[in-house]
Length: 118
Length: 111
Image (tube, rainbow over all chains, first blue to last red; front, side, top):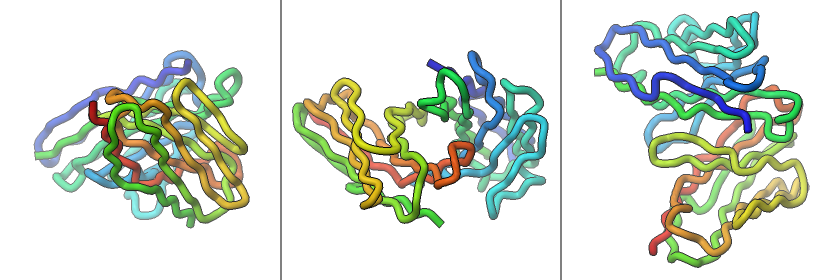
C-alpha cells in the first residue's frame, strides 16, 4: 500500500529554535497533503491543507507566519515551526491524498513528529 | 461545523470479548474513516466507508448515513488490539478536504 514517510519522528529543542518537519509520499504522487496537530489527550486537529505548487490553506486560529508550509513537489511537503515556544510542543502528523490505484483509501498518514520545546 | 462524537471514551475488556465503538457526526459527509493510533502516535487507516459495511479480518465497520452513525466492531479481541481508535469524517464535498476527528476511544484488552 501507499507509504508516507515523516521525519524527524522526535525533536527536542530550545525555545526560539525553528524546526522543519518533512512529509514524503514514497510510492505515489500526492497533490494534496494535510498537516494535523494533536495535543495530549486531545483529538487530532487539521492545521492546514497543502497543495503542490500553491499556497497552503490554513485553518482558523493557525498562524501562517508561524507554521510555514511548503509543498514544492508532488512527493514532499514541509512544515516549519518558526521560533518555537513551549506551547508549540505537540504531536504533528501529516497525511497525503492519493489518487489512482489507492483511491479507495485516499488519505495515508505519516508516523508523526513529537515536538518538545524546552 | 461538523462535530464528531465517539463513545465510549475508554473501554477495558477481557481477551476474547466482542468490542463495539460508536461514532456519531452532525452534518453530511462524503466518507468516514476508522483509524487506529498506537501509543507512539502512529496512525493506521483501518477502513474508509461511505455506505454499508466493510470487514477486514476480525474488524467490521458499519455506517448508517441516514442516522449519521458508524460502528467499529472487533471480534475475538486480543491484547494487541489495545490502541486508540479514532473516527474521522470527510465533510460532503469530496476527499480533498482535511478530516474532522473524534476524540478517540482508548481500548485496553486484558489477557
